[in-house]
Image (tube, rainbow, N blue to C red; front, top):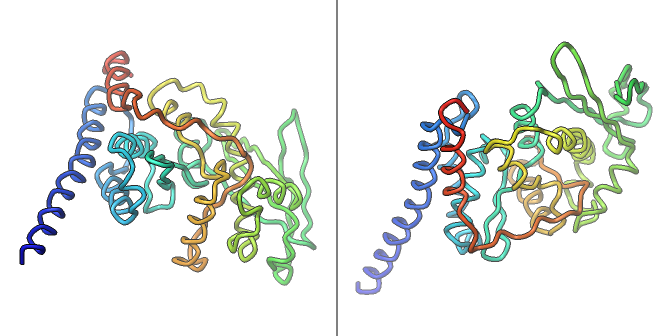
Length: 298
């Protein structure tokens, strides 16, 4: 009986600590909204996103071992960017004692819609036998034709992919990649494009690769200097992660969904951000200071 009592007490203390972290993030978000320093997407529920995210943390021992400050900052970055883990828009990955938020390709699209004039993004895989034409006008690519036969749609027949970003006034921007370019992008990762996701769902993975390539310049050239842009710059896309953790995320999702929903990818860049300094100023404090500078009219 004594042992049981100790275990129960530990669980209670852990629950109190966990609740404090999640609650502190929600409280900070509320403060930023009231001060006019944060503009969240319509119908986005910070409370629901935090609940979903915290369940993920509690189910991952390595994440729970991370510092409280890094866990709180990762959760705050998620809400500032208006992302939801339940919609596969982001993931949390432990780097030693530091928890970091990583965006999926869906997260990249969601953020691009908020930071830029992109209204929507679509993508298609190109299979051997497809008839595809495109033009380049003033440096902008435009897909002018894509005819496809149903019988040619086979994973082994993927020869490329393209993505289109829809902008105001019916303007479109496209990106197109050959399968060789796509595989070279995959080759930057730890699994070198040999994971189950890449071999079993080549068409879906190719589409996500070209979407990330299309979106990246828009995110990199955004002139928004507010909290959202700062958070985006601080957070890498999962496509930029060369570590094996990213591949494990993909494999776990495959096992859970068996291709019943869109899968995430990793692709082009092999760049790495410097780890967070555990002694650095909390994002909470910085966010509050920036919001005060901006004032209610931000």
